[in-house]
Each structure stands twice: as C-alpha cells, then as structure tokens.
Length: 375
Image 1 (spheres, rainbow, N blue to C red):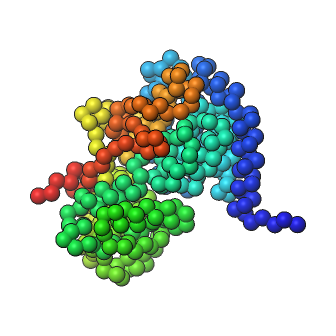
Image 2 (cartoon, rainbow, N blue to C red; image 1 turned 90 degrees about the vertical axis):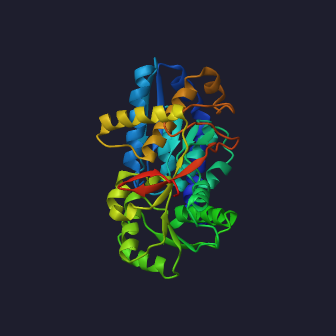
Image 3 (cartoon, rainbow, N blue to C red; image 1 turned 180 degrees about the horizontal axis):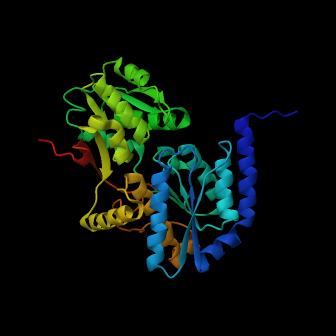
C-alpha cells in the first residue's frame, strides 16, 4: 500500500483539481469578460493579519469602478475553511463556480503559490500581494506583483538608514514569522544584507499572534545588535518595538512598508518614533490620486487607509482595466507596455511580473510616518 504524508496528499489533490479546472474553466472565463458583469476574486486566508485592510481596499475599488464603468464590477472574497491546502479549493471555486476573470492573491506566500498553480492551469490573470521573491519565479506569464519585494524593501532600509552600512557594517537581528513565510523572508533579507555589505543577519521566529514579547525581545537583544528589523504584522510588530524600547534598546528599528499604519502606531506607541519603513515613490499625478483615494476611503470606512488597503485597491483596478480592454482580455497576459498611475504610485511591470518602482524611506515622527530627511 502506498502511504502519503499530509503535504503529498494536498499536492496530489491540488493536481487533480487544477487538471479539472483546466478542462472546464475556459467558457466561464470568456463569459465573465464579455458579458455585462465582470467578477474579480480575492483570496483571504483566515490567518491573514491584514485581511480587514485588503477587504476594504478591494471593496472600495469595486464601488469606484462601478461609478465610471458601463460593466458591473463584482468583487468576490473567499477564505478557506479547513486545512492549508483548501486555499487552492477556494481559488478553484472562484474560477469554476463564480466565474471570476482575475484573482488577487494574498500576502501569504503559501496561499499565493497555490493561487498561481490554479492560474497556471486556467490562464486566469493574477495580481499578487505577496512580497516573497519566489512568487515571480513560478513562470506564470499572466501574473504581476503589485507590492515591492522583500529584498527591495530591505535594501532600501540598509541604504537609507544613516550609518546602517558604513563606516563599519552593522549587526542586525531580524524577527520574522514562523514556518514557510519566515523562511522566505529570511532568505530575501539575507541576500539583501549581503548585497548591501552588512554583517550576516541573525534571525528569530515569532508568530503573528505574538504574545510573548518579553521572551522575543530578550532573545533579540542577546547579541547586542545595532539594529533590529521586525517583519511581522502591524500589531505584533508594534508591541515588540515597544517592548524593545522598554528594555532600553536605543539602536535602529525598521520594518516593511505595511507597518506604515495606524494599527502599528497604536501598538508601538512611543516606540514608533524614529522607526524606519520604506514606501513607493510617487509622481505628482499619483500624489493627486492618493489624496482622492484617502478621502474616499476615510468617508467610506471611517479611518485612514494603510499601505495594504491601497495595494489591494490597485490590484483590483489593474484587473478591471486589463479585462475591459478586449485585446488584453483575449491574450490574458499583462502587456509589456502596461501602465497606470495607481494610488500606490506608477504601475508598470518587468518581464517576470515584478513591479518597476523606486523606494524612499519614511521615519516615525509624532505618531505618523514622514519622509526621512537627514539633518
């Protein structure tokens, strides 16, 4: 008797699902694009730390697209119920049952890869919110990534934080999630540190439902680092930053762009002061869109948007605009000259689907993040 472990069972089940999808999804796709209703699917696993922001950004995109489009736009949001492999089932259902013309993949790397496996069999375009470098190495030609890569953000931090690289390399500790997400982030951070001529990074794993801040902070400070990168969700990252400052750490603190949020600032309190995080540089045209988006988001949801809300908004809008162009919808590929201003900055992509962008640093000051302007 052949015995398969849980991971192999998931892989074989997924293979069977996507083969069936590949045979049955094409008519549904054409109907969803050519008819009077355009459906966009968003996958949100239940453990996603920023699910509220992603949901709100996507639904605002639906509302605003419907105000200017002759085609009705519907955003369908699904989250799995059950084990990890069920993320593929939910992506499959959105293609087969719901007839979506495009998918938004979540920040979680494992779930994003499962969406791409479904997309690889169905040719349904995907916009990914995952920053892992491996996402763009899957070979799916109808995938783009709207968020900066982890390595790009890390290099921006190493290059932009005063004194982080010279006159002598700094000692860094990075706190990352447990499991596969943490391994992917660690790999990208390690490469970025090497390219930036920093000393090797020491890594610590923590859950996004982190409660033992004292233990993690104590471990992080053992090697007496010059700087600590916190690559967690906004709330645990803020709590850990506060604990580190409470313990007397006066060194550098930084993290990914999604920490530019009210949730992080509330959790970090005074520890947000001087905290570094990168953001996508914006032109004046994008800056105008940003202000309009922020006003609309505040009016609709009663709070200011964070970076992930803006990224999910742009992800939905990319799929809407691509599918409303008949030539692009037929090919199902993102054309090499694709360009839109976007509320997160200019949206254009390289041949692997990675976003073309430049980053600047923000620094926490008086309860918000402002451009880092060295004295």
